[in-house]
Amino acid sequence: MPGSHFRFEEDQVHRPLRWIRTGLRAVWLVLAGTALALVLVTHLAPQLGYRLVIIRGSSMTPAIPLGALAFDQAAGPLDIAPGSVVTLTLPSGTVVTHRIVRVVAVNGHVQIATKGDANAGDDPTMQPAAAVYGVVRFTVPLAGFLLAFLDLPSGIVTVLSMLGSILAAIWLLDDLLEAPASEAVPPQAAAQGHRATA
Figure 1 (cartoon, rainbow, N blue to C red):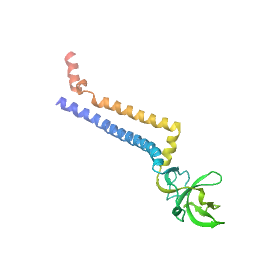
Figure 2: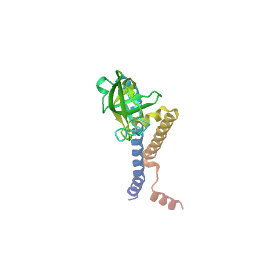
Figure 3: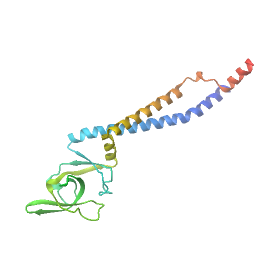
Figure 4: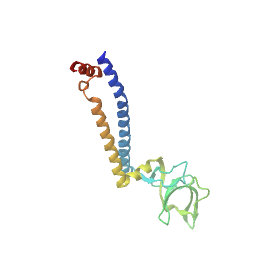
């Protein structure tokens, strides 16, 4: 029947549009959810006693990959021990996250030797235990990259632009898919009407 044939053709056109709309909705939710989660983490982590550290090097791979986000807590006496992964500030001001390999007492002061898991040898100099910024409790891969990106003004603008563009595309697809079927004229009916007026 002409009407049934038209509905079949309409469904064939609409089906891929529905898939695209579903995919865009999923992308929008993931992007918005990730951005919101990172914003919440940056505000809640300090209140829970955590310090956030973006891992900007690969010296701790594979345990802590490049771009991970480390959650540090203030180090207690028991944390200053071989095997602990700590974040410390070097005399140059550089902040590094490495593993403690030795703890020794020098002139009555506790000194630590550290090493990146991926490095061949220990770090060049020992550091005082007081230089330890925090001990790593856990890490989230890639989250550091995303947080660093959102810290940039251009990063925030980029994410908002992407969310707006995806949302506009979803609304456009909604309009295309929800248009009343009566607005369209089946091809057979159009052909019959053309012959009748000829």
